[in-house]
Image (tube, rainbow, N blue to C red):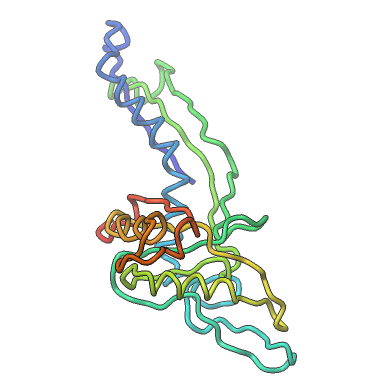
Length: 224
């Protein structure tokens, strides 16, 4: 459940002097538009401490996967840890996405302007607000690699290889590729060098050019 409310002074309405509230109402609308993204990116950032369907943290080093022999249970990682600003390589081209977002109730704008309302009578405030209901959860951990290691070409390759070799139980290949590299402000430069530069650091052809799309998300800043 999510809501925000703005109180408008009764005299401002009487005097037709609502110009000072215009920005507050625009910010109210922006808050409603931004909230779903806040939930999604927060879910990714919290993936090291929140559980997914197999009882492990969404980003973990020991997800249980049954081997093709039907008996052996292997521990599979979708993270390499670290302590820096997080970055994520996601497989988003399939029908199922790594993060599930459900819009239970769209944002609804409403108001309370009954002059007999207690808030109006006692505080001279008419109330205008917006509320909505959402749910966010984790899908298959195999579709996401989360890292707090430095974003280097070697670490990107490690993530890309890990996603490309993911299997379902009994060794069935998932045939997925990490196509979206989600980064915060600190990692935007390294991400664009890895995926957009024509040449590598030593003048060689950049084999990862165009391998994934870069998406910078301000909310992933370490201090956020």
